[in-house]
Length: 258
Image (cartoon, rainbow, N blue to C red; front, side, top):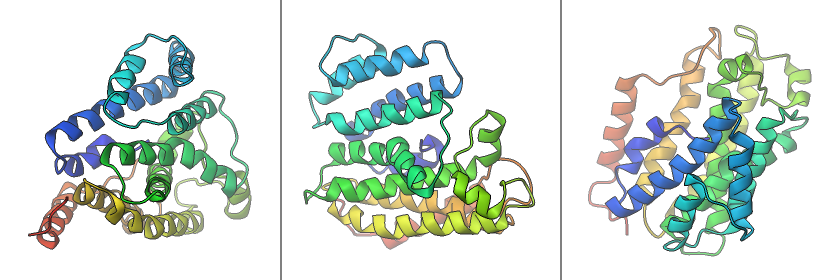
């Protein structure tokens, strides 16, 4: 799921109350994701508790208590939460992703679902706003996958589709330029489609715009780094992040977020 350190500058542009509540939602989802990634013995039980709570059954964990409180103030619908839990179960099972369609489905579960939940906190001006925001969520998730290729592989996770690996070869350092070019192009297409969703938000438009720009810059850093010539997690230099934030502020001087 999306990395909070990359999202933080955007979150700071939200009103305090919404920022606090979105951060609480993020902590719920991040906790589940971390438990799953770490193969924690409580992972399955905690994911199951959220699924039971979504279905209206009794479940008492820190996550379900937080979700119950948030649902009293926001229209937090069941579908995106269940989608997210399906993504967690995919990770627990170490399931194989066979095709690009399968990968897109997983990205919807692990990223698009979060976009929908955030849109429910911020509100949308059209019924299809949440669906469009989900496209940005999938773009962020694909970006995560490309950023963390080596880290995920070290933990036994491969999120690149089997058919894509058969076409380009396994994404080992120094031998993955063609694969990364293909995958970056797919992520960029989702970003371009998803940008149209930002004006549909009732609030948080500047925050969403900045967060999206910072996340997309990871793709540009992969290109600048030579498409994975060296192993390791891709990181955008701090000076470049500050430059992007400054440019974003200049472009939005005098613009209202409401």
